[in-house]
Length: 246
Length: 246
DNA sequence: CGATACGTTGACGGAAATCAACCCCGGTGG
DNA sequence: CCACCGGGGTTGATTTCCGTCAACGTATCG
Image (cartoon, rainbow over all chains, first blue to last red; front, side):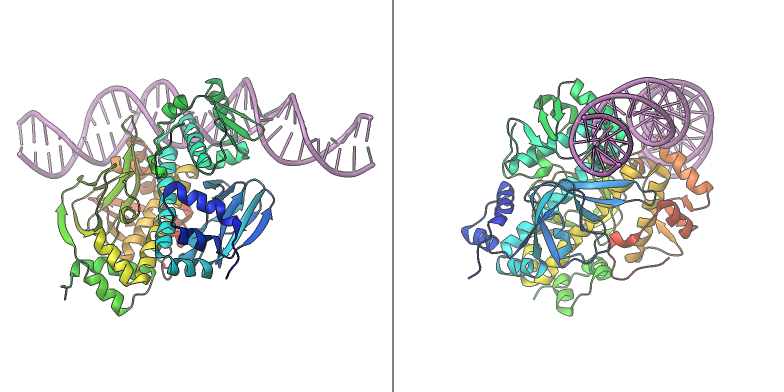
């Protein structure tokens, strides 16, 4: 009998925010063999071109998927938080077409692909749930695309804070509309497709309108309704089990 | 014994551009019950908010996934061509968070979810292949995001033409670097996040540089290397079985 | 034949990039 | 102890890309 791995708890919590698990499925998840590692900020986890044989579960801290252009400009595609498996796709796509790295200091767990595959064979419904996870990632990508293409800098940033509030709340990291936000303005610019200077001006605007506060790596949403209205935020795309209100 | 459905051939061809199928898998695909329909241009296939019970295989023509903002601005997330199943995600995500519609006149085949699920149960490797398909869609979304965030209008448009050439070639719709392109400049703008006016100027620039020709719904790539260089195009993200050259 | 959609072009304005300082703060080392 | 340094944040001045407005051309179609 394999040992139970309490490290899986964040994953279970996240999966239960979008679906319901049976006891057998929870146990199977808790038995997943994994190797835990601590990372400093800005460390690579997987690099473009790699052929990974394991995937990575975020336990603590923030990670990001990103890619560089020839001219050195970076685009961040997604931020990953507790409970996310950012490179689940490597289970079925051999070569990495982007990078994955820590943004803040992180604790991550590595799970061998063979163990994931075995789990998917033994618990076919879990396979579907993981598939669904990657489909929701796709939905988040689409929304991010719409923000990049059709929203102003201010609207886009407001949208990002709305998304973070809901995603972090789903894994219990929001208290009184405040959440950890260990991301620099440079990194935020790389995510929003903006220059650092303009990120700064945009943050200033959101602060000035009394919508958010941001100090010492913590963001507080001061006016949820105002932020939602400005961003035209609709949480459907996150596909939570039940709609959450703030 | 179920009848064979030759309509599945485009799907088989596309799947074989990224993987290898066994005879049993090919037969199982050919037996998939489906209902074929012809659509005029600009018709809805599935709408935001729907709970579909079937998914849609594109046989001929172009379709697009898109969504509107409150102010009426549209963002197109993806164009879908022969062999694509644009709403495969509805197999595991109940509610549509975006729209799917025809761009040109189309022939599509509808496949009931129950038949897809049965196929996935009987041919587990096909389930993984479909999963992989949706993961590649995700990779395309990421690349599109980088284009929206970090490329100029010219580079972005060049990138789009590069992608179309390879994807259409994979399903046999490219001859002498020419391919059908039944997309208006308005629609192209909705995909690139640009105004129609600027789309026009950008097309003019690509034409002026001798990179492409575009007339009567047909695009010809006149200078593949030049286009690739301008776009910084790297086809890895399409995850074809073997690298294609032009 | 006008109606309509699509494409093209010019003039103007605005949002965000770029360039360039400067500040604050927490190391770190002489 | 203080000087120095570097990373992050802030601000102003200028430039650039792209959006908006407006007009006009051209093809297709009822």
